[in-house]
Image (cartoon, rainbow, N blue to C red; front, side, top):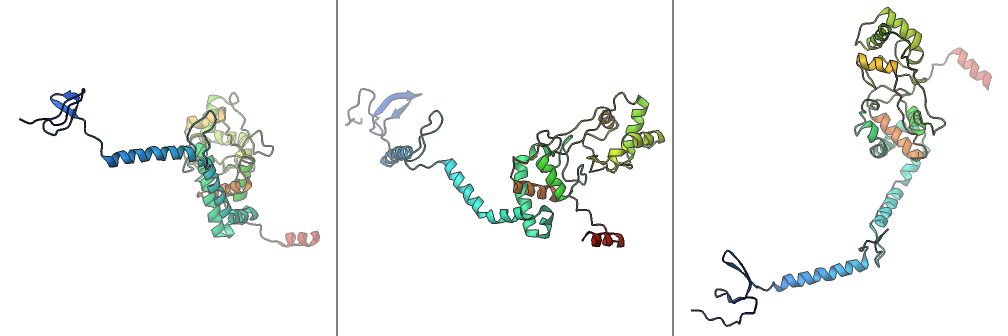
Amino acid sequence: MTTNKIPASAGGRIDETTGTETVGHEWDGIEELNTPLPRWWLYTFYATILFAIGYMVLYPAWPLLDRATAGTLGWTSRGDLAAQMRAADAARAGTVAKIAATPIEALPADPQLMQTAVAGGAAAFKVNCVQCHGAGAAGSPGYPNLNDDDWIWGGTLTEIEYTLTHGIRWDAAAETRSNFMPPFAGSFDAAQQSALAAHVLSLSGKAKASAAGAQMFADNCAACHGAGGEGLPAMGGPALNDAIWLYGGTAADVKAQILKPRHGVMPAWQGRLDPVTIKMLAAYVHARGGGQDPAPAAPATPETEAAKVAAK
């Protein structure tokens, strides 16, 4: 029989096998021993307490109503981010200045500068434009796809920059692009509506044309959309002959747009973004694959050359 040499406390007894005092807890015959914590663990725990006290003194730690305690070092995560942003701005200041000094139509002549502008525009697009045009700029019903060749107001670099700067039907911008398609509800009977919608669809090979529909189109639509439905960017009249549809391309969709047209709105980014960012955004949108090149200059003729001489 083993004799306990360590007296038991009031809360437990001495375990015969280990000679360690128990704490008085027992589960299904298993008793908890009052084993002291290892010294290394205790020292580590004390060190973490000292570290926490030092951290609270040196860094922001205690939340207040509108801020946290400042800490003796004066460091903040926002201040650190601001310093990093200033360093990044300083590193790219030269490139930004070069983009600012280069007319947007001249950017493609410098491939490296154009590539830099496109990269900057991609970053700005993710922050400001994906909400409507999607992460891949593919758009959705009512929001234009920026990857195709359909440009309502023109797809050259200068035209895209103007659209971004002044917006579309943005009342707060005096020079915003604006047009409105009149509602034709009540102007045509059911047969005329169907004939006109069928003619619009026939322009992209989706329906059969009819003389009645063609005449109605010539009388009511060609002034803005072109005689062949090719679109008139100067008027903001979309092309109707390319099977690209902003509000849907079924007969019902086309008829609904004829009777009660919908008009999209895009904010003017002038004042919201700086001119260089707008220029880079235009470069990015143009580079998505659907941008247009400027129209070639008209060839010189004896008449134009004579006019130049006379003007001098």
